[in-house]
Amino acid sequence: MLKNMIAVVLGGMLGTLMRYGVILNAPTEWVLWIENGLGSFVMGVFNGLFTRFPQYSGWKLFLTTGMLGAFTTFSTFSVNWFKLMQENVVMAIVYAIMMTVVCIVLASFGFLLTAPKKKAGER
Image 1: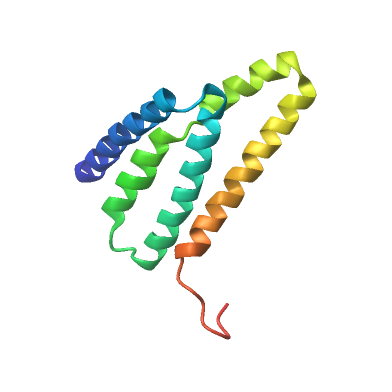
Image 2 (image 1 turned 90 degrees about the vertical axis):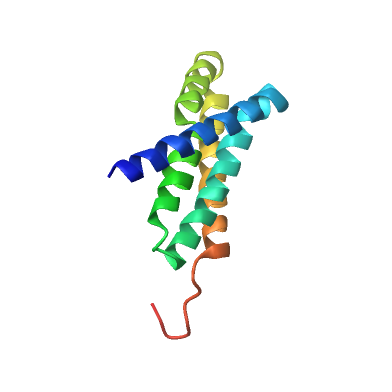
């Protein structure tokens, strides 16, 4: 239990630093797209890999719950959406749909790249 908590905390520290690096180096209007899009893709990749290698559960906690949990951000997305909602309802709806669809597609693509391939006749 303590080992898992340490893995999540250390991963979270790394993810926070990565997120701050994006904030410092990317144009403001692209920060959330980079963090959430890249984070979703990498989350899919890691989940596909950990489907193949379930024995690495400590690394899964470090990389997914910790690092990517801190790197991606739903709360900032929500605040930006709320501000946009006050300014332009249509743009806010488009923004929310696009962010959601892009992140789901990227996570799915990442997973499909790394998940075990099913053999003919398997479900």
